Length: 289
Length: 265
Image 1: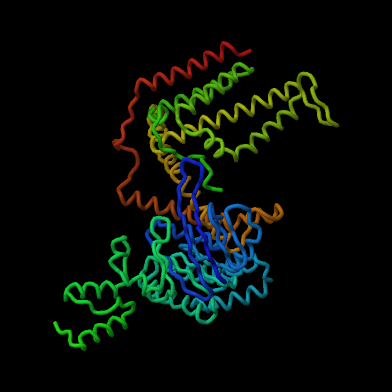
Image 2: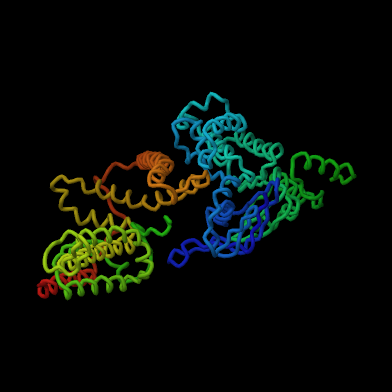
């Protein structure tokens, strides 16, 4: 399912003294089965943009097309239900939304809201709990007896159980330990490859953005500053650094090395393997110090 | 929908009312609440309305914003209105429709009581809008200080108040977040039968309570970690200053009371 925005803008509390323009002139498109990363500072409008993706917020100007449905600033929207099912959003710290007595009930909550019968929802719950890397016996436990990391996974399972076509993730690894981070990020990658779910990832981690995404949107002060492939985005690392954003470790390392030896090694490397290969090539070509 | 709420919110601005000593504002409001009960005819209510809107004007808070923010009170006021119009049975009957009889005094009462309620809310909203929560509590603590002699826990009360006020916006934001998360999971808060809607509140309330308790616990630990041990021997960083205009404001309300006393029937 494709999502496209046209001059999308949103102003919080319009016409009050608290009025605050969060985003404006947003023109982005999220293709089917793609992996999009949205990066930017706190307050750059990432979360606001994200809430438009399933119609939680109605644009105050411009429009957004989700599948066949167009949501614009003008008319009140009716068919949001189907959109909410097809675009699943995992908010920041999703474990805060758990409320049922058992994990199973909490996971079934989403699908049953969308009219899936109980038996089928339970079957789905068994399926997704394995997908998020937990075992089936956790289904009978209370979500409040779990560890933070487990709660996070249960909450993600609750969104996955709705069978979304697009999975929107707002900093899904915030507050997790390094191992949990890698596991969760690998899981999303797998979901996309095996089930064709598009992923939209809002993140502060440039490593995650460069490793997993095929399209990166850089937000700055409420609008899109730049967008393109990870290669495009990180090809000019200094620009991002001037913006106050980070660049992937490998890019930073290469940049420092190039500064030190005063020569250009290669295009910025986005993974550790690339970095090693590029440096190797560079020295093998006879560029001794 | 949460973002429209202005209850307990502070709107930092530069105005006469903002600059007033919080104690003065508290005194003015307490007096006003007393004075408002003196009004009982058109003229006295007129004076009250005039005074209220003059205060709003002096605070530079946009009236439209204030009224929008209080729109949730509309139903309560309407309820009060109908309660009085149907159940006060004095004076002449002015309108009959089937078994419904509306009396002259009923109508009058309905209008006056609703108006009284409305003005009270307006004036008290003005207090929270123009005074930061911390100022309100400081003022409250300072005004209640004499009660300390009677072993009344003034400091603790002030602290409780400031924490409660401080967390209204936080909890509102939290509500908004959980609301959206559950809406993303297919909850529809605005449609369906009454029973269904009541049920849909559960996924909102449980997470909200849990996070409120967590917050309370964390706050308590953070306070203890910084050596908080109650009000005993505690000095203040912000000192309140009673100025000429504060006396003037207090006198104005007393004058208002006098006017109402003279003109009431």
